[in-house]
Image 1 (cartoon, one colour):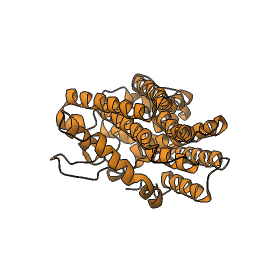
Image 2: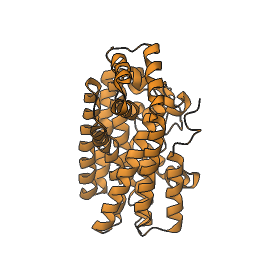
Image 3: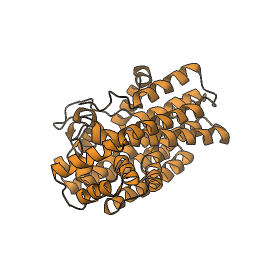
Image 4: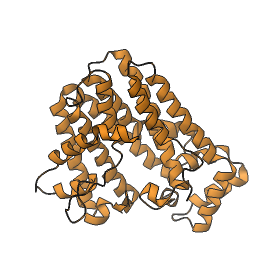
Length: 332
């Protein structure tokens, strides 16, 4: 996201996170570490993610003539839900690194990581309740969808999904929180139903773009971009966009390469190299880049039909530009 967009809301989001997670109660230090407020020793730190979702909520509320301060609890509740999902994702995926730091489970163990994720969800719901029943209901709907999407993602490890099944999964797993981010801003600005519907579409398009881009980075990115080892998803036989796209267009010989690699519990380096080469021959990286571009353009197209300022359009274009997959993206 562009610097101006970040600077507009970042400090307020961080300060509210600091307030919500303050104290010496059990696990509070773990939560502050996870969201980036502290390092592993408890010293102050700034290891935050991009904070796209809560920033979207505040941005949309302000653009629709709402008060960003009134939307702050809603925005932070969304970020806490996102944090909850990441803690549990890391346990399920066995990922030992996130944002270049040890994950919660790898540092404190799986039982405490599960507890930490549960506590983040509870704090998120409490924060949403403080923002009002409408916010709480919308957040709960998003949480249900997100968890359903995660369950689908895990189920794909045992089979090869079709592209339409993959799309339905990411609309839940990733899209639910992006749609919620957009809609919460509209709810708090008391926007009409037509505006909310368009914002739902913007959130859906952004969610698809972000997930497909992340899936491409998982194969062709760098460890510095990912914050964890490259191709970890391949080793776990996850069916992300590159794998699903390759399976859908492979000939018999290419399909045998894919199937043979993923038939093993731990694919060898040689098998993974052949899989990546197969994906590249099939043009998966290029088709993924086109998908990302199309979804970002779809989000901008919807936004241009909404009553937002010229500066608001510029900020969203900057966001979309930062999410595009270019020839330089993923070059190691």
